Length: 111
Length: 110
Image 1 (tube, each protein chain N blue to C red):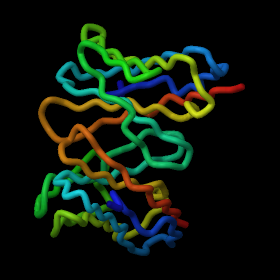
Image 2 (image 1 turned 90 degrees about the vertical axis):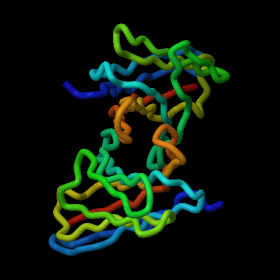
Image 3 (image 1 turned 180 degrees about the horizontal axis):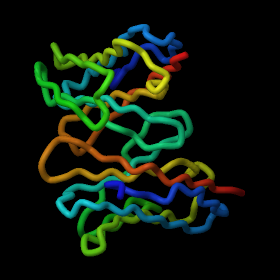
Image 4 (image 1 turned 45 degrees about the vertical axis):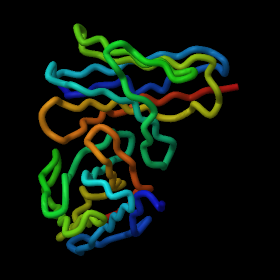
């Protein structure tokens, strides 16, 4: 099993550009989550999903969108990149909410 | 007040020593508690769950104090490889969200 994979590993965006952060898992997990982690800080939940077709907002959803058309994939969309979105983005999945497996992260720099 | 709070550290620990640190949570409805470990520039990984009766996994002991609303992690016989940031995670009984603390950084030195 590859576990949780994220692409790209690193990206530089200009202000106002859009991009999609990809996340995929091959463990047949229903629960999937997107977090962001700013330097020296803990993780903040952006969006989560408890199954295909179901998504819900987390603590910091503004400026982001998600979709969950399949069990395996949970992409995160940034429509108009802003410097405040410079962060490390982690995707996680789990069979339940208690145990989460994280991907390696995507480092995003918005200039 | 933050929902989950941790001393950011760093805790500088001589190799072989014992270190302990706490995590406080504000919501008494919190049900499940975990410790995650995060190495520098890496993803968090589950270290251990925290049960009401406390639990031990090798050199690591986690405890829960519901009355005072905190959980603790104790590391015995610290190894250089224990250097990491330890994240406290709290889950409420209702809902599907995890709340992470800001992390406690531990540096084990020879």
